Amino acid sequence: MSGRMKPPDQPLDARGLRFAIVASRFNHEVTERLVEGALECFAASGASDVPVEWVPGSFELPLAARAIAETRGVDAVVALGCIIRGGTPHFHFVSTETASGLMSAMLETGIPISLGVLTTDDRAQADARAGGAEGNKGWDAAATAIEMAALMRRLEKPAEDAGPL
Image 1 (spheres, one colour):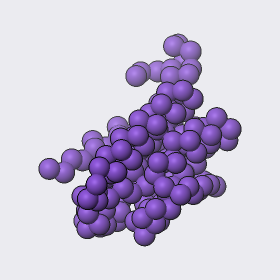
Image 2 (tube, helix red, strand yellow; image 1 turned 30 degrees about the vertical axis):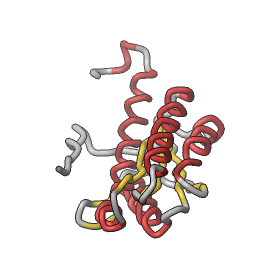
Image 3 (tube, helix red, strand yellow; image 1 turned 90 degrees about the vertical axis):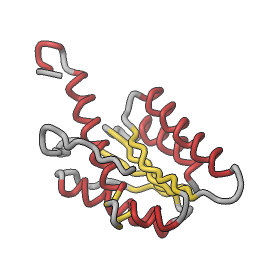
Image 4 (tube, one colour; image 1 turned 135 degrees about the vertical axis):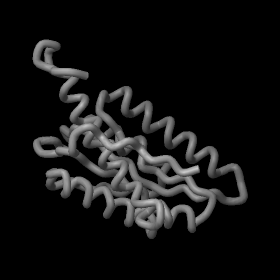
């Protein structure tokens, strides 16, 4: 079953917000398309100068995402990668620890980190999610980062200035 996210109530507006992308080189044929999708979303939403930092694999994404969140003055980070199931339990260890590490980094820094790491059974599923029949999950991860950055900015305002949740 394929799910779709409900569109935000307002159009995405990334103007005045700062973002960064951290991406895995492993399965780079897929990940590069995810990065392209994320950059297209940011550009369409008014963000500019979004840097991309590359790490060896998805397992390294949490450390890099945390460092970027702590040192780059960004409003959100997008973590992109592709983990394809193989014949050993390695898939489970990498995917679970990557997601857990990104969540920990987000909670520890208070900076949204969007999980754009594909976890698929095979390359065909990955291709479908990286610009194929199921869209581009890099775009979706960037859209999530924009929405969360805007929410966090609203939540930082005093209650009388914040407007409705």
